[in-house]
Length: 242
Image (cartoon, rainbow, N blue to C red):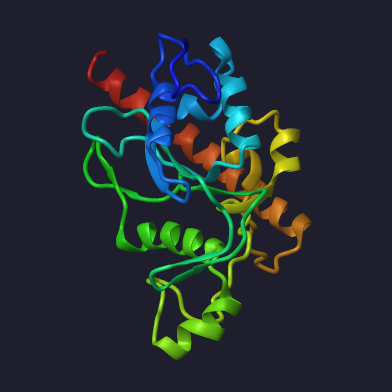
């Protein structure tokens, strides 16, 4: 018979993403959750049946959250990776001090590709604020505020990173809570950038026409400056006999 772990489709031999993912799912308890760091291709690949496996995982409501990470986070590769948060149950329940709402039919997408700073020439790192932004978004999305108010406050429980009343909201360019229909529309491609949209641009109050005129003026001045600099360099080179 076939491998009992391949519940959602037989993974291709040349790529271990969906073999590893299904192996770990196979060992989860009926209410278990886990996080896996995988190559970016796992979110979008359609080769060798991988798209069908991803679709089956989504339709089985196992994908809780996908986080897209920036490149150069790891010393052994500059390739960007992603984190899959998987769970066997999205039903409302209490886990220690946390009260989780019913998240069935929903998946959270977090695009963290723009977070972090270059620690040196080749390695990127997250600040505490960067990590906290991801953690808070995920906690707030899962958290049941009403259950916390009914039970948690009385028991003195708090959830790390979250204060009462600090509710989840989609943030353009960063996070989006998607429904199954949203993922169907995207052909079950789970790249967060497909869902979170573009970040809001802060309105500086300057009328568009004025801004364009000012920017054009700046550009013209920079072209003139560049041309003058080029002439000076040529003159210097000619003076050196080059």
